[in-house]
Length: 356
Image (tube, rainbow, N blue to C red; front, top):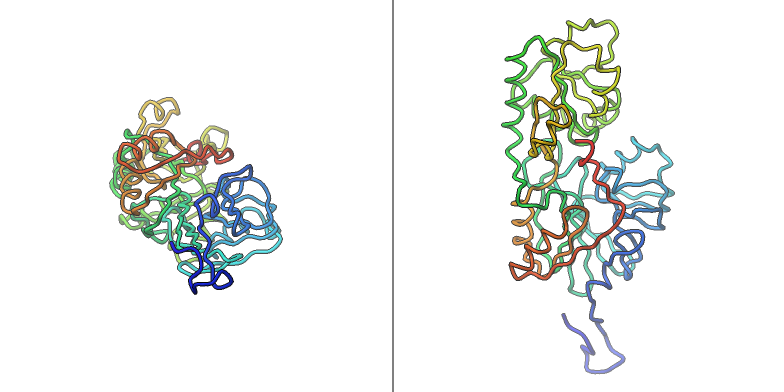
């Protein structure tokens, strides 16, 4: 970076040195930009919020203004209603918007529909706030785009070396094989309503499964939104069709929020076989405790290898770690000669930890 008088006089052009903490820093409401006067994924209502994606631990109502991708804004409207913020502005992926002299660009994160990393730049310093991200291929959203930077702010949901996610296509093949092996049983798949449910359905279609997929009512509006945004889900039908008998669901796949399988709603199906699509299903004891017969290790977050590879590939000299297994990833960075710190921001509960 350059600083001082570029024309040789004190009154001429001056570039101020910018520290990372001037550009972004953790605060009571989450990541805040002192220079730009905005927050990224704030945990409480703020005047100006930049939102990485539509999951409720990142996208909250009540902000005076919201800047996000058009898809994320549509997700927020679908989930919270039209009055979720005072004003809103859609940012196209790759478009640079200047806020109080700070340049902001949204780049694909590969997490769910509309998800984005937020690139923040001023006076030669570039910081990237990853939001939630994954590197695996996903037919329902734009793939992760690597952005070289000086400081990388990464999630760490699966930030432990024990987490290694297999390819999702193989897990889907296991699901389809199970329907053939147990044709008398209804196959439940627990999947979070935003992102995971739609990904599971689309992966089923890509694997050649052309039978109807039945969905819980809580998934309907978001599935329709995905389809309106160009993600074809095929023949999806309400699982609450009272005209169908228990036997009509034999061998069928029913996708629903995980909690739905624990109530009376699930009793109307034929010999339910409970599956669960989540990165947490790699912990077999967790699957067993939850009564999951068919654990499907399908995650919308990066695993340990993806997290560490991404950190290396960004070329960042400094890494900030947030919401997840922070300490292990910080230690890995330090052992590899990369300055790192945990942010300890309170308020990111990680819906996937409980719901998918």
